[in-house]
Structure formats: structure tokens, C-alpha cells
Length: 86
Image (cartoon, rainbow, N blue to C red; front, side, top):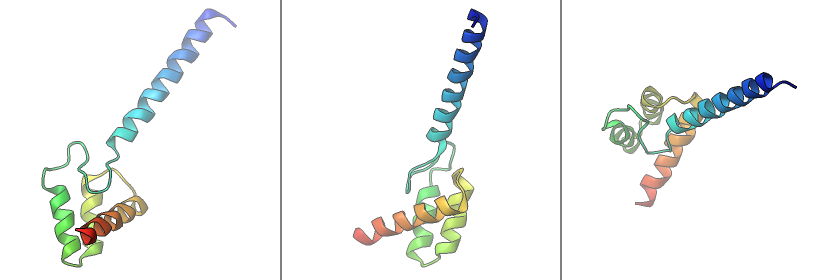
């Protein structure tokens, strides 16, 4: 195998790792705000949960976080569990 091929493979692996790591950094933890999300996004979701408007909370969460429906639902349910423990 030539050195050029090895360098190209190394660069490709490096780029892939960088992109996967970058993607993981943009997925927010439940209750936290995603990078670039408005400062009150988490408070807004919590407010909707406490008012019993879970579906709206899930929609609001998805507007501010780059996640799918399942992940948003799980995150909102985790926030809901934490709010009950307070």
C-alpha cells in the first residue's frame, strides 16, 4: 500500500471522527439547552411540563434541540421526573 493511500485513509478517519464528535456535542442533555438555543428554552419546556402540556413541551424541546421525536419525548420525560423530585 502506498503512502498516499495511507495518508488519505488517515485523513478520512480523522474527518469522520471529528464529525461524529461534533454531532454528539450538539445533542443536548435533558433539561439543558443546545448550543445556540435561546437562554429561556429549558425554562419554557419546564413551564409547559408543570402546566401539564407535555405534547407542547416535546414540540418546544424539538424546536431548540437537534433531536428526533423519540429523543425529545425521552428528554421531556426525564425533565418531568426531575421536576417531581424537587
